[in-house]
Image (cartoon, rainbow, N blue to C red; front, side, top):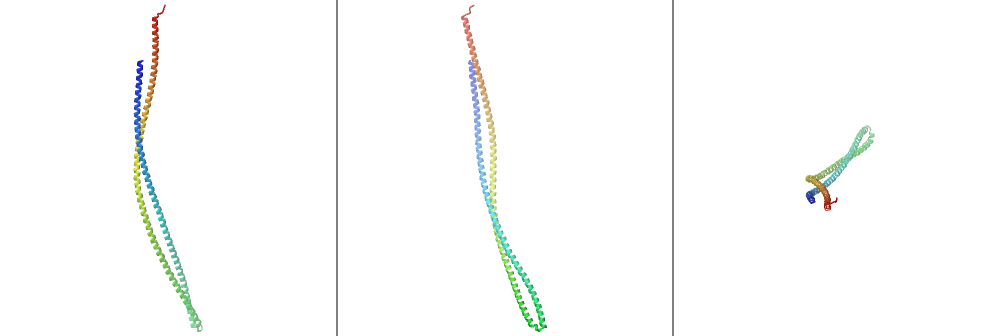
Length: 323
């Protein structure tokens, strides 16, 4: 009985020591897991901070890029306005040149009409003069032939001379009108040409000024755009590098996290094994205790039986049977 109790006590103490050791190992594993998880959390927070900074830089660059784009659109709008002004000036120049050309054509037509009319009048005048000369010759011949017709011939000659004078006056008037029309046409043509040349010079100067201003604005905007593009490219490379570092760090943290998960899984499996072992030991201990109780009961029964037999023997000895 004492040995069974001692064995029971020793087994219970050994079981407690084993459970304490298993709890200590599990506690250390959990502490290590907590420490590694804290390190992972700190690394993740740092990575999130770096990512937030990179995102802020990217947002800032995007805002600058949007501002540059707006400036470029504004320059393009100004360019469109300048092109519109240029087109309007060119249209006005074309209209004025067309008007001058129309006036010139009208003057040329008028001059051609005057020339044609003068040519017609001159031909008529020449024909009339030839006719008059012929008539004059006929009249002179008739005057020489007939003195009676001298008065009539003289009157006809006076009449013809009057007509000739009138025709000569018409010819002079026609020549004067022709010269005046020619001079007026030349003056109008010179004025139109001078006006067109002056307007063309003004338009060329205005177009050159607009082109120079536009080229300066384009050059300035291009330089500013190239500068911001270079800055944006550099910041993009830095952000890409930071993202690569963040990805690498995140990959390492994932690997560490997986390793810690594996270790935690191993620790949980070990804890489960220890728990199963503890349950088995508890079960075995319970069985041993049950067996011990059964043995104790059997021993008690045996002791009781032995005691009974001893009492019977003693009674038999004290009271022997009679034959």
